Image (cartoon, rainbow, N blue to C red; front, side):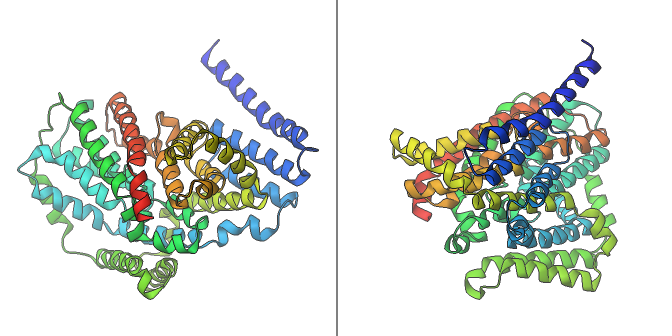
Length: 468
């Protein structure tokens, strides 16, 4: 069979499944379950298939579910739109605009070049510097896509500055170090990923206050240490026989001088970062919501026209914003239809029959997340698993946050390129810039890091008892 014919057959079968599975699902559950619940499950089955086939932009299946619920009048409008009215959604909008200001000003690139210029007499430190710098940038730039775009841009500039040949081995270190620095600690800082803010919608107010920017970092400290040690071990193992890049450090100094003095946008970016971080750190004292601080900074940015409205509209990834809003709404609908209780109660009984150990719970969450991630993207996985698995914290007497952290950490693990939209985006950016690297080595590195993600979670269990 020709490749084109095979693709057409797969497409036809996919559309047949999308059309028929919800019908069979509704017919199977109708009469056994409430009619509205049966319809909602049918809609979710359709959306899951759409996500699995990866034919649509990620927010389309989510909007399909919300529109279906609204059309069939399955739930009140306040539940359907709860994701777009949530504090997490407002926080994300504010953070995305601030992130746009930071990246558009060029301050991050200036800092990176400044640090690299200080290591100009030690070329073997460049890939280590890339990892460290993007690790530091992780909590400052909450959008993964933004960090990947910045990393690809940096690699392009370094490759051009140093006149690197189009060889895989010359770029492997920079490509992998920049990617891992941008993604490996995404769940260790609350501001490092937009997905982390979804957790606040499902934990108590007391836990939300406890796990602010400082509490979150404190609770994830052991995981952070394990992941960094894991990166060092894997890096030593993978690159033990690869030669170093022959660099020309003087060009970085020249580029830094060409940037000139700090611009108004760069100064404002530094001020925004300082105000936001200090506001989050001192929240227990002043009780001013970080969302209010972020939106206030956004209003000031718009009033002072630090960046014009057209740039903001063009630079902000609205797809991610609406996707997360839809994901929160889907999670609220799962709770509204009490699917969380229907599923979590038998799971709790099953696990307690095996053992009362906390490790059984965390291992179950890890395995479940890995399996779901084989079929669904990150946002869909988090939106479904958070409301269903978080109630398990009650019978096992653990913190709801710890279960959420496990879900977020394992969700970020991936084995195949189709599982990670940030890697797909990163790869596309590098290909556009004609940066050639060895994808086999990249994937081998990533799969080794996944092992340390599991170890990071399991190593934190007793520590969580202490801090939570």
